Length: 362
Image 1: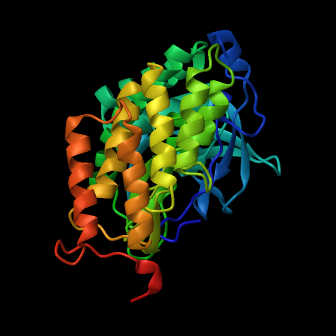
Image 2: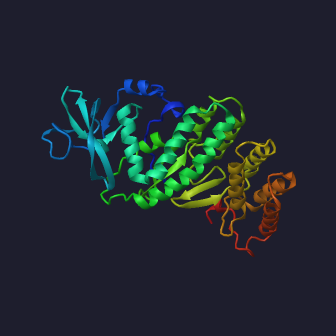
Image 3: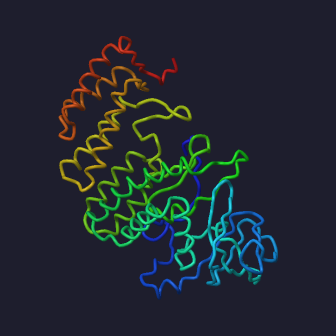
């Protein structure tokens, strides 16, 4: 696992899951038959005899205790700060494993099932965190992904998710403050709300960021008709082969410290990945916008003004020559000009301030 990230464990829903779960309900009648089981995620959460902060305390619940939903939800919400995050959720009537019945605050619970009460909590959290317009977009995205059956439809769903992910990351960066005590807020529900993405802590554990889980998207692609989506997500996994999660640093870059590292140009990885992108480009993949973005990132890694390189000069020049000689249609005139200029600069790295052979440690 890359040392600049703290991976949180979550549970995928529906077709994105590698674990077996109950299928998503298809009608209101079916929705009511799903019984939610909640998990206490705040140690000492109080089980009360009546909903609301004034209800008589029955006892404090332990972190990780499981509670069964009894189907009753308060007709009011309560604004509460939990681990530095603002919640405004209702109270739920539940039963403990010891048979006790009472009310608990919804914001202090984790859930992974798709019952009626869990759906109410998810909707409230989305609105509280992101506002109603963005919450509606998230709900529409999740609904679309549940029903896709063709590769073209899945591509549209994925391309929509890319823009949505960027907006949500902006909100997460500005709207969630990690407390200095180090007590982490529980954002498990983001994975339920936005399938195919994992929330993780970055910037020394101070900011949450959503990253694409290409393995989950690949499993979803197996359920659709057509192979275009399978081919695209297979290539995405080649970009992030360690665990299929789209972190900051892809396979053509070696991370040597928390916030950076060096390009691996000279190992053949750039050319291999560019060949894959070019193949999908020529086949007119429905993922063209994302394919072009990935191509741009790869070219930028080669030509970055302040880039540093892990391999020796000879290997770097050989790979870049091979890329130019391949005449990939995906490379436009600007790409070719930038790559050609970089090739000349690699001939005199000192003159252009280019640092090579970082593997030597010099």
